[in-house]
Image (tube, rainbow, N blue to C red):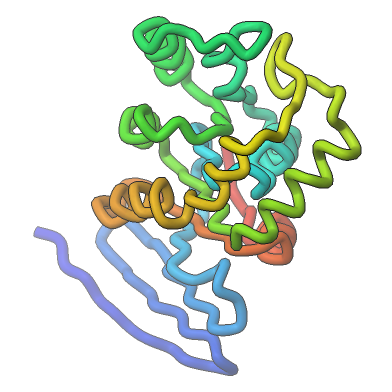
Amino acid sequence: MGFGFYAVYDYKNRMILWIIRKHIDFRLLIDSESDCMKRKWSSAELVMKRILVIGCSGSGKSTLSRELSRRLNLPLIHLDNLFWKPGWVAREKADFKRLLKVELKKDSWIIDGNFARTMALRVHYADTVIFLDFNRWICFWRVTKRWLLHGGEMQAVGCPQKVDFPFLQYIWKYRKKERLEVLNIMGKNNGDLQWITLTNPSEVKQWLRNGLQTRR
């Protein structure tokens, strides 16, 4: 039977909890100087091969996903491309779920997007979830800026970017509706899933610079 030894070391606002077991050696790093590094599991052999990037529209999911895809050399899947047909025509739910399952069963991927009704299914297959939990005003500003600068670009194949009232309403209500569903799923995590929450653009940059230390 295995046993655990626990030691806590606190120095210059940094607490390191060492958990040493017979064949496993993980570190839980808790850094009071940066919320983005709190409750972050790391190990010498930490693997990120199936990554979900979720968060409100305008939080920068696609930008972060592209950067992770470049750094980790993982295929990138945008849920918008699976769900929307040209001209913003929604795909049938059963067809969308079928296409999604095909991607989920692959060995490695980064999937960018929300679509709450398939969140639990995607989490089941993932080893890492990155939640961009941004303030709604940051999201409003980014969506408006993107539309003004890149309004003619495609958000999905055959679907030019658009900003309308239902879309803005979705952003406004996100924290009171879909965010709660995300937190509920996060609360059910039994430790098998690495969950990383970043709350502003500075934390994203800091995590990319200091926290993204993985081996494939």
